[in-house]
Image (cartoon, rainbow, N blue to C red):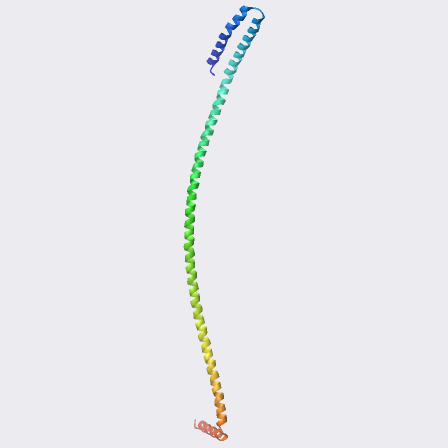
Length: 190
């Protein structure tokens, strides 16, 4: 409230109260004193209000202005925070959409890698099988050669035994002496 407004209120109050005071004073008696007391109280109250308004106006207005400024700043900060939150939410949604795409890419890469690994393992297994086949063939051939050699040896021994049996049965002591003589002659000739 401006000082002029306060002065106007005081003057208006006094002008409104004066006719009532004048009428009460004309009537005389004890009622006039009560009215005069009322008028003085009203004037006193008006002066007190004017002084309070005059001196308290600046701090009250400054306080109200600072409250308004604080509310405006709070609203501005809240609007800025809302915009920032919306931006973060949009960014999070974009990242979430990107995560789905990334997961698909990772799954595709994992499938491809597992297929490559499967092929590599199969190739190694085939190679190992071929190696085992080759080793088995070599081992079988060696065992076959050993068996054949053993069989030849046994056949030869059996043949010698059979021949010895046949010779012993058919060989007479005279044939025996003749063989020894022929053998000794051959030795002497050489």
